[in-house]
Length: 135
Image (cartoon, rainbow, N blue to C red; front, side):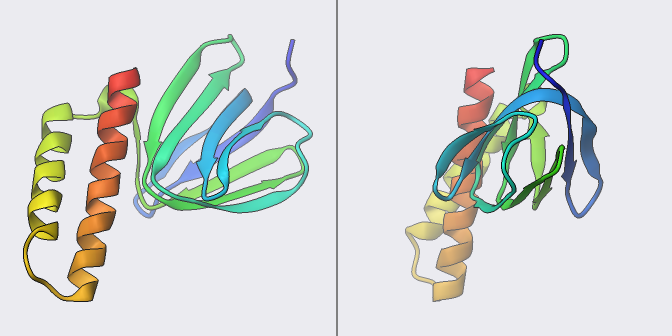
């Protein structure tokens, strides 16, 4: 049986998750990494991407992370994220509307900042759609 470790996932609005898990897979800017108890210390940027956690009962749960920061140290992992949603709680229709809106904004003339924000919104929408589709 795998050794559990503590995972804390925090957004500006709330503590999204705090509990014991035995394994996780998360997307960093350098690629997907797996983490288990005793992992070497690490700090990494997180783009929009999936977070998969394996509970102590062996079940997996997937969430959509909307950018953030990962810190691994000791027997604890912390994720500070802009937003996080469990895959089974994602409103797929709303995510598709967000994708359409972001694509429309990208196709219209706008400032560099507005373009960057539209790209971020598009990445978040696509991540939510992808994560929901794999649930």
